[in-house]
Structures are given as C-alpha cells and as structure tokens.
Amino acid sequence: MSHDYGAIVIGAGPGGYPAAIRLGQLGVKTAIIEKEYWGGVCLNVGCIPSKALIGAAKRYEELKHAGEMGFTLPAGDIGIDVGKLQGWKNSVVDKLTGGVRTLLKANKVEMLTGTATLVDAHTVSIATPEGEKRVTADNIVIATGSTPIQIPGFEYADAPVIDSTGALALTEIPKRMVVIGGGYIGLEMTGVYAKLGCEVTVVEMLDDVLWGFDPDVVKILKRRLKKDGVNMLVKTKALGWEKADDGILVNVESEKEGKQSLPADYVLVTVGRFPNTKGLGLEALGIEMDGRFIKVDKQMRTNVPGVFAIGDVAGNPMLAHKATHEGEVVAEVIAGHNVQYDAKTVPAVVFTDPEVATAGLSEPECKAKGIDYKVGKVPWAAIGKAIANGETDGFVKCIIDAETKLILGYTIVGYHASDIISEAGLAIEMCAEALDVGLTIHPHPTLGEALMEAAKAALGEAVHVVNR
Image 1 (tube, rainbow, N blue to C red):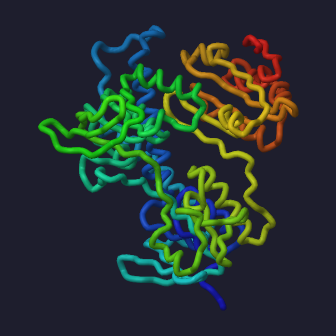
Image 2 (cartoon, rainbow, N blue to C red):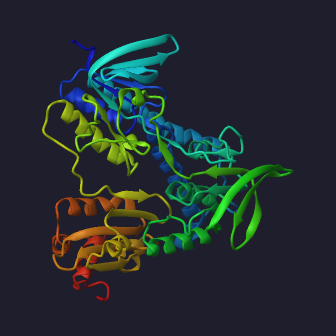
Image 3 (spheres, rainbow, N blue to C red):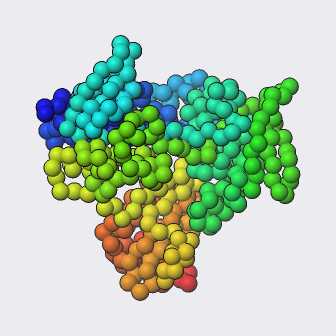
C-alpha cells in the first residue's frame, strides 16, 4: 500500500523536531504534527524561558553586590520592570521557535497543526478547527512529551495554584510563594523568585530536597538557598489551600511541627511530570507499556511494527537532550541505518545557584552498587578563575574505579557547572581513565582546570589540593 509519507512524527518538541529534520536530511518524506508549541514545552514554556529568567535573576543579584568589586551604583534598590523582563524572555523564545520552523521548512518537512490520534499502525487522525484530517505513513514516531503532575487539593484551574509554566509567566514579583516539591524544577524556580525579592517556602514530603543527589551537593545548595532567605520544610505534606484576607493560606503537616498554615500569594506545584500517552489510541493498537511509559527497544521501536517512541514518553530520564539524541537515532533507523541507542551516560543539570551537574555514577550510587572506587575532590576555592569571578561555592568530584582507574562519574556543584560537564560526559563515553583527563593540558585560568585536577586527585597526584 502506498502511504502519504515515509514518516509522521507526532510532537514538535526537542525529540520530535530533530527527528523530523534528520528524516528530511536523509531523504525520507516526512510530516510533523504539533497541537500547540512548535519547539515543544521545553523551548516555549520550560527549559529556555526558565533559563532566561534564571540568568536575569542572577544578574540582578550580581548588580546588588557590584559594590564589592568597586562599582558605584545609584542609591536605593535596583528596580525591576517585570513587563520588560517578560518581554525580553518572550523574545528569546520567539527567536528559537522561529528557528525551528525555518529548519523544518528547509528540510522539506510538512508541518501540520492539530491533535493527533493513532487509528492504526500507519494512519493518524488529526483534529483541527476545520475538522478531522487523516494521513498515512510507513512509520510513525510518537514524541508527545510530558505534563506537570497535579496533586489532590491543588488544581491548576484555580488562579493561585500554578505549575512551572505559570511561574514563568507571572507579571509581578509575588511577596510570598509556597513551592510544593523540592526537586530540580522547584528549586530552580525558588532561586529565581527568592533573588527577585519574593519570600519563598519550599515544602518537600521526602527527607530532603534534591532527593537522590550527592548529600555533599545538597548541603551546599541548601546553604545558598538559606542565605537567599528561602525557608525549607522537609518531611512535610501539603494538604490543601484556602483563601485568606491577604492572599491564601497553604495548609501543610509534618510529624515534627504538626499542622501549619503558610501565607502566600501563589502556590507553585512542582512534583514531577507524567508522560503524555493517554488519548493517543495506544491501547487499541496493543502497544506495550512500561508503567506510564511506552516500552521501546534500543532502536526506539515499540512492539507494533512501524511505530516508534522517543523522549519523555519512552522512559527516564525525562530530559530534552536525551530526547534529541533519541530523535536522531530513530530517524536513522527509519532511513535504514544500522544504529541504536547506546549512550553510557545522560548528563543532568540543575540550574540552581550554584548550578549542579552530573555525568555517570555519583558517589552514593557507587556505594549502593558496592563498587570499589576512589574520589578526587577539588573545591572551587582552589581554582584561580573561580576566585577571580567571586564564585567559590562548591566543588568538582571525579569518581574512578579503584582497580582499573576508569572514570565512573563526575559531580559538579558551582559556577558554570552546566558548561563544563560535557567534558565529563565525553570522558565516560570514551571509557577514559583518570590519566586521560589528568594528562590533558587544560588552559589556565579556566573553570575546566577543576576537572583535570579532580582526576589527578583521584589518583593522589593533584598539585593544587592536598591529596587524600
């Protein structure tokens, strides 16, 4: 049977649009379907706008402390024009979404707007304002992303209750905010509003914020958040909220403090995300699931021939760069190339202040697995560039196998951690030993020197810190 396209991609996020572009490059006639955000949640109301606001908040804080470097600023507080701030953030998003459309068009990908449902393994129904449209393809790629989890008692339909999208679009700096969830999204938004003058309280049901991260990292991050005036309540459950004369009251409960009512203007819920797999018609096709995720093999194939899945719907970690890589893999598989997903690590970054970045195994993970390992740890206070920038909070850890000296992982907390973690990812992918990084001459003075020094420290050969 002849189909309309060689491939149809459902979803134009960081997994879907790279898949469609790569398919076009490989000569596969391709269509991509998007119901709302060209570029996906990440580009429109997630990764990119949040980093724009995080960068703005960091710059605002730097201006307030500029006097320490000898700069004289006008007397009084530095003002914030929230309307202009939002306008600037939106201009960043517009540039990138425009770029996505341009690239799709340049690679001869047809862009279709509407809500897609799978009719069968080769047919997609698209609901549009003009009515239903059906298209067919040899292959279908599901790249529909994820949605913020809603918890009982905190419905997003209620104005004071917002998700991360709402937090990025506020037209005022609230006086008080309660953030439910101490994971990476919650702490990133906490940092933004705390720096801009909002009184923030974080409510986390687990034993600590950033659960699962190296405790040494969490300790440094909590110290900075406390310095920024953030109140953190752990082992605390959010019960609900009610209107008050001045804003709202968020009701919480903990074993230690009992029930409390926290005054706020907004309550931000950041307790995780669900993959968008409902309503696609997967059940009728008999597509196998792994919990809420679509079950795929290393070529991103589902159990139904011709149907693939990538990104958040295909399993953890739910990260944009993992989705992009899977998108490129699936395109090459559809084009007949002999490739598969075989990444050894997916680096992760938390854009708090200071930033947190990891690649490979962390020290707690090595302990849990019973691995015989060694650690090289270098504080930023030992790195000239960090001192010169006035950013000495944090460290770089290099974890190596005690016997083989292979690099197992890096953990970085500190200034520009996000920008230097990629070297660690490359080292792990190439099965590098500590000496491979340690003997690579790193330019001075740079932050990257810390990765070299940490690798040497793991071998007991560091020259800028005391070897242990």
